[in-house]
Image 1 (cartoon, rainbow, N blue to C red):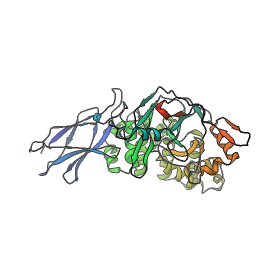
Image 2 (tube, rainbow, N blue to C red):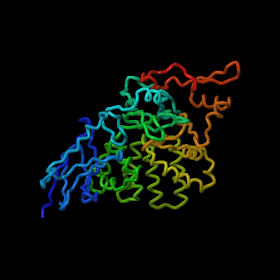
Image 3 (cartoon, one colour):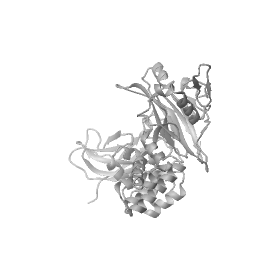
Image 4 (cartoon, one colour):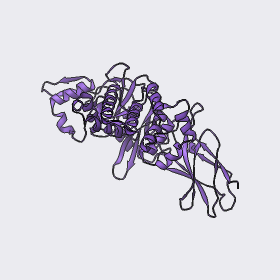
Length: 439
């Protein structure tokens, strides 16, 4: 018996040069019961076979943002079944050419009061930091203020590719700035003014456009929506073949898929030699070495060898950069627990640094982040008191030194310091380097 089929078309805002983006799809009945699962791509007309029931059936497209789109499989008011269904996501407003569906987008019809939005966003600032290859020093680098897109509720800023490790330091209305990992590929940051009943207006930071498939995978993993990931990354699926078995053209998405397989402990589809190649050819992705080490340890090693590998991995990580994905925090924590079992490692600088990093850990969506003034200056915000901090001259000097910013002492003995030269303010949407301001 031949099963009926439906062709599903997915339209997104991706440019011609972008690769295919994959999303899980279900056929459900009127009660939401899943009758069939599959995966669709925006680069082709997708065929889906299914069994018909007496009741109505629907196609549900799951998006990483936590939302879904539903289309009926039958023509309204008739028994005729649709032969083709279209999901047109271009109607969702996005100022990004490569649509990031893993984060809320700008509202095309602003409904907030403009004055409230401007007041909320006026205190937001950010800095771009890089760690030049072959050095152990992070430096604050200038950004091009013309590479921006502005609306009433949002400011988006584009970054090109870089050979150096990168991170963002941003103040988004919290007591202390946050350090957020950035990829070395082209990417975009978005500061968006949001609102809810408990917090009122507040700014949010999103990192996007570095790899649509990676963003999708990590968003599903972050929310523990493993059924959606199972559809995307089952053995034999198009995305699995593209990421794991063919030449790796999107190593960031391949790393995201490896996180899922590691959580599943699926050693068969996460072979050692594949992880070796991923780590060897992509040193700009620290997560790859983390995953490789944890895969070796979890699949079975003698305790002494496991401790040595954990110490070596943490040492290289603290030298190299900060991980890209927040999922890495679980792996770093596991490695720290192992390393602490051996007295000689317990007081090493790289172990203390890793522990300090985890104490200040604060994810930014799927991205790795922590509270701090620079990528090498994490601060435990649970014990941080701004009022006490700024009244202590010695600590104020330490802060200024850590930020590499100018400071001076008044006749009364007070310490003053300004923002670094390359700090970018969202105030008045000018995005121009500011004159020195006081904290």
